[in-house]
Length: 303
Ligand code: RIB
Image 1 (tube, rainbow, N blue to C red):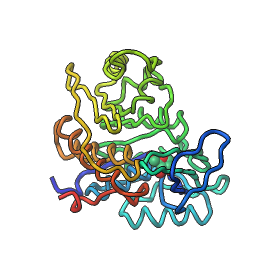
Image 2 (cartoon, rainbow, N blue to C red):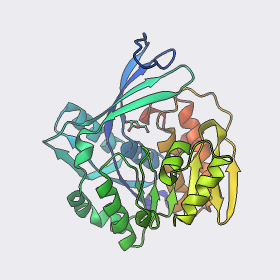
Image 3 (cartoon, rainbow, N blue to C red):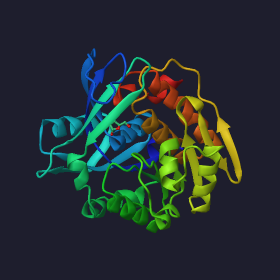
């Protein structure tokens, strides 16, 4: 298949990331001195869109930014990354979404998001983007936009019998009737626990969470466990793929990169295990580079 034949629609958030590097993450109530500061295009939706485009997919994004300089910069950035922007709305009532991120020396982070215009991604915007959804091979959705829109987006996608990947980040509970429509869900451990109301202390927690999600009606679960790798179901078998041993510089957007690569590999006709393995490789590139979109690889870099 020609790369550009793979059509992926990403419905999600677009943020400007304000990032401070620090020797460690501060404790509650503590002020610490950090080092470098930089701004970087981010947002789980936009990161996934850019990652998929860099991997060769034809990507269309549905989302909202504010009518402000950050919004203009983020749209220009998406355009520059060859992501289709005709379904991105510039909204006058809210500022562009912002994420305040701290990254420590081990590459671990904390992120606080002020959603701003991402809250305005409504059903009417989905209607505007319906043609793109109709043409898509895969629709990729996360949870940084209103939940009602996420539900409608999943229903609309399934009305056209298209494949849905739901990245349930940040963690929220999801209606079981909606979960039944999802082809692949990609929680991390925390998100998996919240989706299933599972206590973290459960023995063999991850496998239990995956089995519960399957029982709830999701077709496939791919759980990302950071440095411990990925656990997923291959029909009834639970499989584990260890993480690639790389030097972790910054984990920001690693999950986004993973989701995008998974989508790209599936649109190219790979099996789930091949797609998971590919996504692991691509995400290991992202964690060994600084920043959100800055860290996302182009297909040729992976060779
Ligand atoms: O997944 C990383 C992203 O989460 C950051 O780019 C930030 O904007 C938040 O949405």
